[in-house]
Image 1 (cartoon, rainbow, N blue to C red):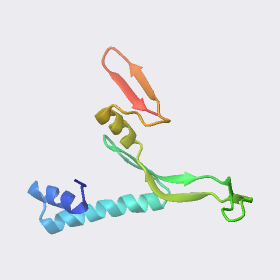
Image 2 (image 1 turned 135 degrees about the vertical axis):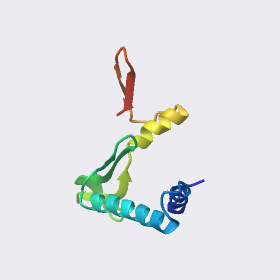
Image 3 (image 1 turned 45 degrees about the vertical axis):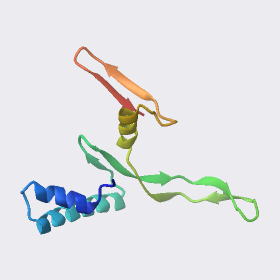
Length: 117
């Protein structure tokens, strides 16, 4: 099942804190804040959950698919949102580490803290 905005509104409503209309307004306001921050080039950090950032592609050499000639592709902000915490969640839930990521750990007598980088 995919978690949708309607599911989030319903879950917030079921906590008996807001009416359904108020729940939808709160969720809309939250998503609008996140969207505006990302459009302004700012990262969005939600402690204990993760960080959202807009993927950036730097200027690079590509080729014209019709002629095969090399060409310079301009730098741009991609239409995708990067969510690095998803990689850590994937390994935690499935035990599978995506290619290109390695684990860094800090060990102490109180706790072991590991993150994927």
